[in-house]
Length: 450
View 1 (spheres, rainbow, N blue to C red):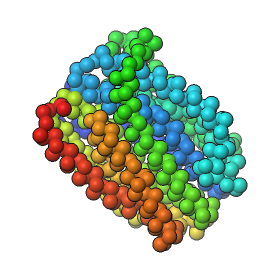
View 2 (view 1 turned 45 degrees about the horizontal axis):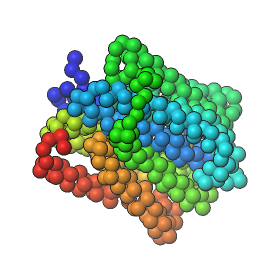
View 3 (view 1 turned 120 degrees about the horizontal axis):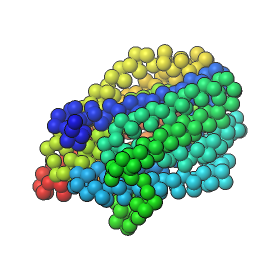
View 4 (view 1 turned 60 degrees about the vertical axis):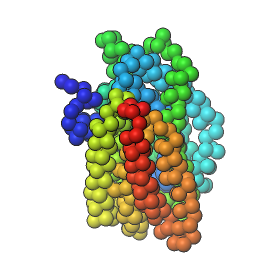
């Protein structure tokens, strides 16, 4: 059987790498939505608001994984395309050990500065206790959150698609089961939700490490975990971090933009934050499926680039963008037709259900554009062009987004704040297409693989 990198049919290759990654992201979405669904039984909007406020902090922790996971993914895929397999093993080992150290540091820092972090996220007197309860167990699980979220990218880069998907699904299923136990049966509230999350990531980490150890014992030179293989050099570290930091900033700046948005919505009350939290989580379905597609395809793009296959690289990007737009359009239609019914699954109060349904329809306007933006970002990351992927991230979450929130809030109050996301992403999708076409045109003037 041919490896996914050798697959002749481009559409089939995209499906082989994209569908498992999308499935993994889907299980992540299910566990995120499960947290909120189980809080439905508590009839306490302040708990939903607390989890909404903590989401950016969790994303920031995950961003550390992106430094070494997404950075290593890009470097490893290009090394494989260039047939430099010995360097692949050394790069993978460095990334795994670096993530472990980073997780321990974040655990300690989180416990030392928990209340200031909760305050910065937008917590007030009504939900501060719930927010700290959630953060306590998230910081406790930080090493496993980072390793699990980083290793999945490393496994995809060497063609371990099935293993990466199984581990992600395993962790999320464990999370959902313990969400029900801790929140519904034992009434542990936000602390229970966070503990279930951390335990899920612990289980997926154990699975990933077991897969890697087993593959190493079977003689796979790409994946042998060993302290003796931990021999980072300046060039290796620089290559990983140069790509990984923009990848991490995607998550960090997404968190920053969410914190900005939460603080503006918080002006209109805790109920508004809860309604937005529900709409945002449902709207994350097409967003994260698009992320799964783009992340799954990224190693394929990096491999074709390293091997100098310009035509296959171009076809892969074209088809992936088309698939992303179609996916977003389908969800836009679903959310416009059934927005109120979907939000009603998570809220009791009729006014909140109506408000959340309206928020969801507005947020969904950006769904078709997300496929273009995410694929363009993954394209530049896979090719090692850190500056352009960072530029897209800065435009999306800071340069365009913050002024849009300020301006639209002044013009249309809360309606304007919610409309900021689709407005920004419509503009950014056009910019991303222009950046990609310009880069593709420039590469026609240079030798393959350069």
